[in-house]
Length: 101
Image (cartoon, rainbow, N blue to C red; front, top):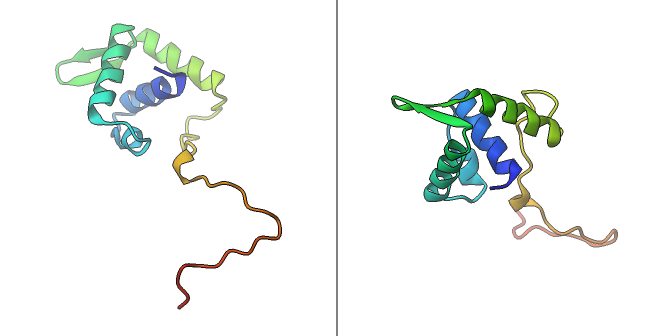
């Protein structure tokens, strides 16, 4: 599991947020479940009753990954959406829309 995915998993669990961010990144529910079980196996998450919570190691790993990936503030969680990126076009290329109103 990459650092970016682990960071998103730990942040999602710490905020008790939805996993839709990972689904938007293109992962399936089964892949997300595998990521969560791996984070639990590594000792970053623990399951209490029906909730997942960060352990002390998970909190320190979250801050470590934030520093490593240069996320300085807690509110900078809008990650780039690489699926919407396109190839750059030439300086003198003209782009016309599909439909003209």
